[in-house]
Amino acid sequence: MVYKIEGRLSNLNNTVLYAVFETSGGNRIDTLICDEKGHFAVSHEQDEYLQTITFYYNEREGHFTVYPPEAGKTVQVKGDAQYPQLIQVKGGRINNKLSEFKKKAESILREQADISGNRNDNQSPNGKNSSLLANINLKLKEAAQEFIAQNPKEEASIILINEYFLHPEDVELTEHLLDLVSPEPNDHYLVKNLKTHIAKTKTTIIGAKAPAFNVTNIYGNTITPDTFLNKYYILAFMALWCDMCRTGIMMLDDIATEYPKDSLEILLVSLDDEMNEVRDMILQDSIKWNLVTDSASQAINLFEKYNVNSLPQCFLIDKDGMIKLRTDNGMELKQTVDEIMK
Image (cartoon, rainbow, N blue to C red; front, side, top):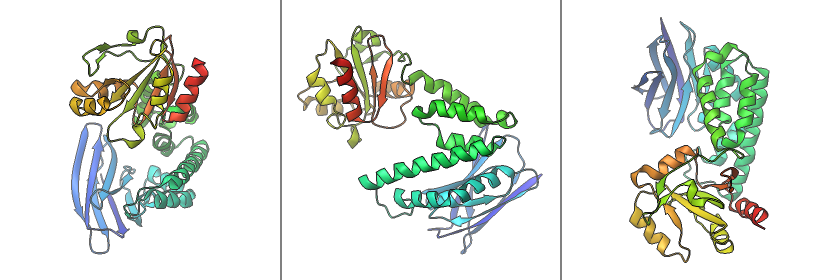
């Protein structure tokens, strides 16, 4: 049985589309050419292992996803390439339900696209826009949560959980939403992925035992949790190219100078692999930092163990090896340290 995907995208910068067919066994990529009006079409054999078809356009700057429809169905795609979040995909129950959600959240999604710069204006959001974007993202999560509660039998609800509720701070909410989903979609591959994600995330939430590690710092010293026995310590994940990761912005300078190393230590974990470059930067500082770089993939292994997907990220760990705080906010880190240490 063959199904067909056809559609029209307005405001394309060029006529090339890349269709990525993702299966449980791997991916296949097809190149499509739209006509001058943005029309395109592709046919595909029904495949029980096919999970998604993602279409990339405008030199891969924009994309939208199609979920395999029921046998024999035709999927219709229509939208403005400048607003990928609003592209409507009709045909098949999952696509129809996700388009229903997009329609309900259209004004929020449009505002999000405008502020985040998805209209190809090459402008980065400023501080004010970042605050607005955070508020919009919160509204989207609320809209998604309402939709999930109203549609517990839909596989589309699983997809929305995966899209909007994977942040470590949301792990309890993610688990709650997953529990709301009735048994029908529980064999969906994303359910298994979400359960794996929840279990892994719980290893680094506040109150969890900090994962063990064994690394070598830039001075050749072996560092393990036992290095910080009977004292508090901070794991600060950073990178040289990350402006917000600077030790001053994260208030690590203030913490390091205010509290002696026999009561609190800081371990910087830098994603950079050029040890000499990082060492030169550190030597310019008056503070002698305990630093691990990504030589021999040390940092990336720590990033994975601690579920760090964005920078900066700091963990405050107590004398018993328990995570007391996880934050990307230097002020919050400093305030928490002050409350504990004084």
